[in-house]
Amino acid sequence: MAGFQFIKFKYLFLLICFSATGKMFCQDKVFNLWENTVPGAVTTKEYKEEYRKDAEGNITGISKVSTPTLSLFLPKEEKENGTAVIILPGGGYGHLAVEKEGYKVARWFNEAGVTAFVLKYRLPSDKIMKKKAIAPLADAQQAVRYVRKNAEKWNLDPEKVGVIGFSAGGHLAASLSTRYDEKLMVKIDKISARPDFSILIYPVISMKDSLTHEGSRTNLLGANVSESLKNQFSNENLVSSSTPPTFLVHATDDHAVPVENSLVYYSALKGKNVPVELHIYEKGGHGFGMGTNGTNQYWPQSLKKWLQQNNFLEEEQALLFSYFKGNGEDGLHLAYSEDGYKWEALNNDQSFLTPELGNEKLMRDPCIIKGGDGKYHMVWTVGWTEKGVGYATSEDLINWSKQQFLPVMEHEENARNTWAPEITYDEENNEYVIYWATTIRGRFPETQIDADDGYNHRMYYTTTTDFQNFSPTKLLYEPGFNVIDATIQKKQDQYVMFLKDETRDPAQKNIRIAYGKNLTGPYSEAGEPITGDYWAEGPTATVIDGTWMVYFDKYIEKEFGAVRSEDLENWEDISDKISFPEGTRHGSVIKVPNKILENLKNLEN
Image 1 (cartoon, helix red, strand yellow):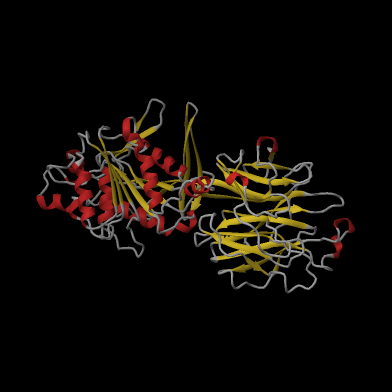
Image 2 (spheres, rainbow, N blue to C red; image 1 turned 180 degrees about the horizontal axis):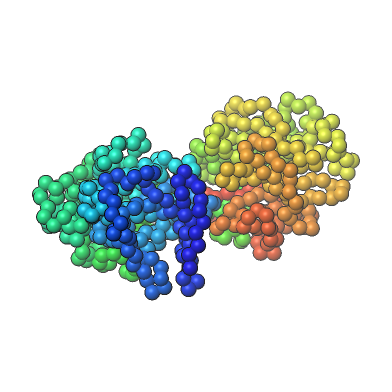
């Protein structure tokens, strides 16, 4: 069963899903690689693609490719990290193993947050191309340029576009990595075709007699190949200092493509001081794909570590919760969780930082984020009647800078307080937005009531790039009611504000959501409550495995609560499924590298 949905994206795209016996495989978009005429093509109606299928009818291989395409596989929005990879399946330049060395690989990359593209490149044939030896490389060059050209549309970093190739696809990936700026049948584009990283799995590297895979060489270059042509297509001869960082995988018992292919390429890269990592397994043979059994099945984990070390993937993240206890007099507390449900205190639930600012010297409502500088930045409430907030920074969440008082409301004579500050890093403008709730006497009289002891909050903000100079304080959100405890998360091209409706009469005391196109607003009207029939405050939100989780303080019941949603519209109360350290008061949840968490845990030893 196949369904087709047409999508406009400069060209015509197809959303294709195949279902067989309940198994579903989806490509987000498939589109033609070349805008108009395929360069160097020879038109013939008799030459048509042929498909290899498994017992369930799923396509596993393609041969006689004459029209190159890119199949786009998108990671879940909350996982995407801006890195892209173009996948080149193997098949000896005679067919493409698109399932084992294409679609399956794309799904693995998606789980790691990488946007994947499976390239169905032209397979060499004199019947359909003028220069069959260079047509696949021309397609690979075009694929890199096309991805970079449209990087913004897919939320990609144009400097994090890599390539992975298997077997003959590995030869093509290595050729792309060494011949990326070679003019092939088309005018050289201003956009570079150089991959930012290269991953070669049991690759054909050389066309020399002692090393090559005969089938790949014959299909690409023909039966009778001159020595000069062999050298021209042997990638170990073409490595330069500009060849991208490379990750190599091979098996010693590979009898189809000798392991020496990877060895000579490794030596060539090392000789040019190109960063390279080589993994050779005792067993595995040829064509083990993502790994089958034995030690070769672990190469994807090694690849993930390599990508992390080279800044193409973020390190594995742990969940960390900052909070206060009592009135906030003893300072910062931290807890961690492996699943977002069970939270355990760190440092034996002792304070990590003692408050020093303000008349009352409190550290309530601690909000921590990781900034554009790689450091952790924290703001907090320093007292009940202060006209500013506390600020400190740390590289490891253990050692903190000198505490700094930010007098964000000193200019307002009638400001009564500065409560529950939050901080968000604005990547687009490379600045920090600090926002909080303040009551200014005489403002917004239409929502002023005596029952709230005269408190009638609105949300205010300031921006800074260095925490020394600040923009003038401005109104961030005026929803038409007493509002406090706002926290903002980015979701694709919009910002989601979770906030507390502080209205006491008639009582609301619940969490709502507003949306804005810009971090500093304007924001929409607040939606319906997402919390239940209890008083909730201090929301903090994160996404875990595609699910939005919002934690909050049930301050009347003196316990913590939570709700979750897949779409920000339909919410489920899961307060009975979570657990926090006894006495936890509200703060913020963030994700930190595992090594940061391990260092925090070691403090208890």
